[in-house]
Amino acid sequence: MISIRVVDSITELQPADAGCIALSGSHGGLSSARYALAARPLLSVFNDAGVGLDDAGIAGLAFLQSHGLAACAVSHTSARIGQAASTLSHGVVSHANTAAQALGIRTHEALQPQVDNLSRRQP
Image 1 (cartoon, rainbow, N blue to C red):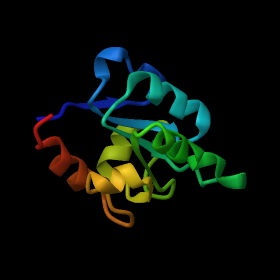
Image 2: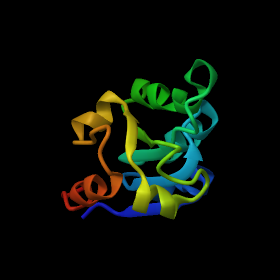
Image 3: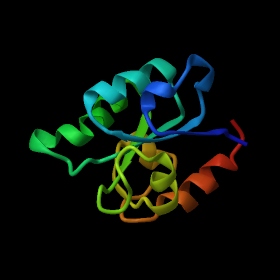
Image 4: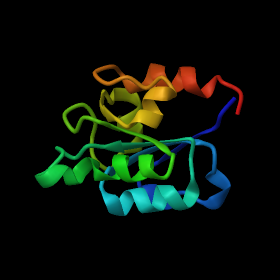
């Protein structure tokens, strides 16, 4: 099974978390994505934070894609920003980069069953 790390802030990830599924309450902007890049999880999950001006709330998804890493965001209307437990239990995926889609992550669907399916795979 692939481990799931539930962190309110993506800054809590450590190098030992490489290859995990990282569920965070953090926005999906560039600053958050840099922390995910350092830890290199299999999948990073963020909150879209309302997307924002120039897509700033999800800019990290493209950044991580450019480094070959999967990332997605749940809608800010489905989960509380800053609360990873809410991301997992109530989040609906609003955006997913190509690498996340290749792992089976689909937009407009609840996050939890998708993460459960992914976590059952062999690392």
